[in-house]
Image 1 (tube, one colour):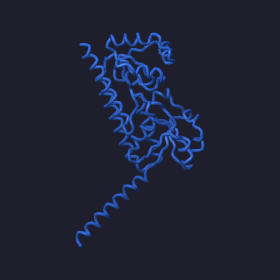
Image 2 (image 1 turned 90 degrees about the vertical axis):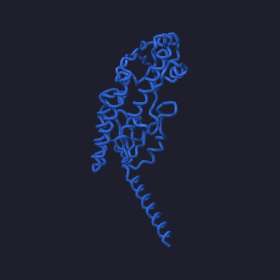
Image 3 (image 1 turned 180 degrees about the vertical axis):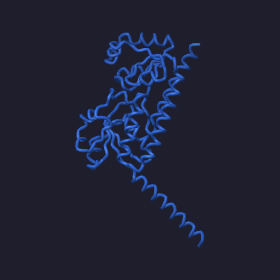
Image 4 (image 1 turned 180 degrees about the horizontal axis):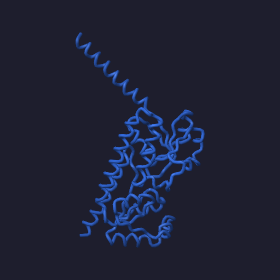
Length: 275
């Protein structure tokens, strides 16, 4: 009899626990965001209190693609919370105009690609904190702590990146060059005219250029923000480094940390091979 009562008690506790977890999950604030970088930031600062739905996602090739946007917008309640960088960002997003969109900026003061710049992203994160706090004022202290943690971990990632200080790399990227500069890397870049020509699959002179970089012990870094045809060409060489996208579930500071360490390991291995 006692065993039966004890079993029933355990089952009751388990049901209460599950119900509590479900309730917490249901109480999350649902936020639609227009940009994947905003999604990463909002997810970090919102932590366990928010559920972020991006209108665009990165596919397996690193390309930014629509995330069933039409379906997402059709199923959204009229009072949904939508977060955008600025008004220009939503001009080409059909169907978003009917929602009450919160803009972090009336006009983002720099090029949108610089949102990942370590000198810019903390200010964007601060504005996200403000937006979340307006939507969910009681949890302001929680969001403030999350922002402080983000800033500390971002600074830590940049500090880790200092292992690349004075290391020369060849920047073939579309946007991650600013992250290389933040570490104190020495940057080599091809002439703009040549880079644009290579991006159009006119590869005359490209192999010679990359061979020259390789002979100087310089790693060529590229990312997913350059033309696919050039990406493919670079990916087939062993003396290049692909600066990827954050994997699902990986926050921005962790991503930066991993990229810096991986690039440093590649440059270090290259230097050892040459000795």
